[in-house]
Image (tube, rainbow, N blue to C red; front, side, top):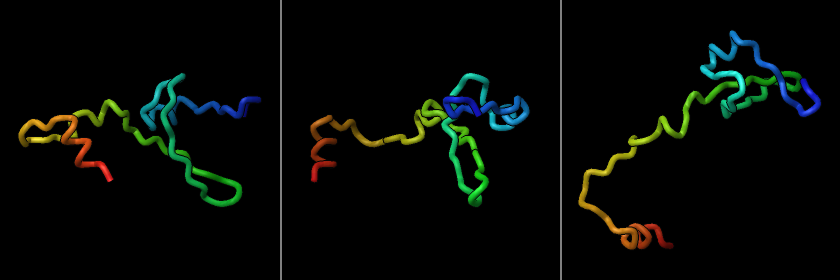
Length: 71
């Protein structure tokens, strides 16, 4: 671990997680016990989510959307 609390991940682990050196994989850390934890890549980029919530109804104005979410 470096002075800035960074670690080096072996290239084989980076390959398994699907991340490249120098990228921020937005890992999910799970504590296993008091001396160990598990790091898992979410494997999902915000760009991967584009288009998953599709709307097939009539066009809705911004004002209608704001009214729908107003308390």
